[in-house]
Length: 166
Image (cartoon, rainbow, N blue to C red; front, side, top):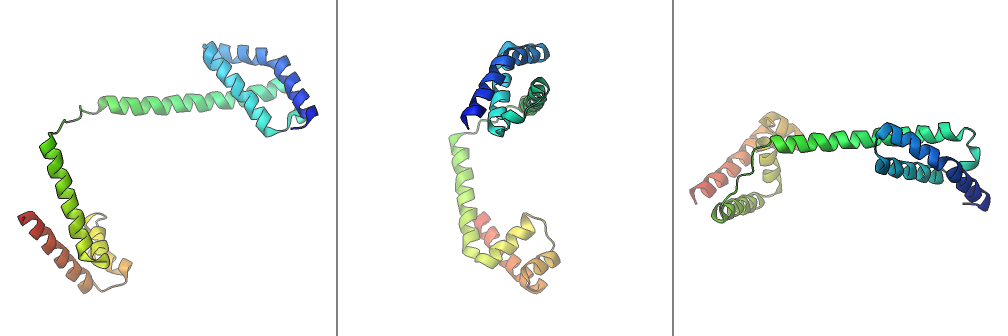
């Protein structure tokens, strides 16, 4: 930033910061939020690097501040919606360490079984089971015949049954 830009920005801040704080305070009803948004407004002016081009400072500053206010209100609305969803959720179920261990062991066993299938068989199995693809759509995706998809599914399902029996 050049020396002239710096002095223009300093003058802009000195001449209009008090007014902008009051303008924001009247709209927000909160001097702390108003001071934060006024500061953010001047940071935007600083980063825009067009201080000398500003002809109507209060119009320019209020437009930036208004956009920042809208962003702040949107953030608050999203945060509140998130908190509302969390409040409506049932209390988390506290599972016992034994149950947690069983779940983890099962997941590890499934992961090991999937790794043992081989890459193509694993991808076909996951496409059918997790994505809900039909055998025909799976065959098209992987460029194989429907018979090949069936063969891989039989192999994978056999491994699943063996896992369940263990």
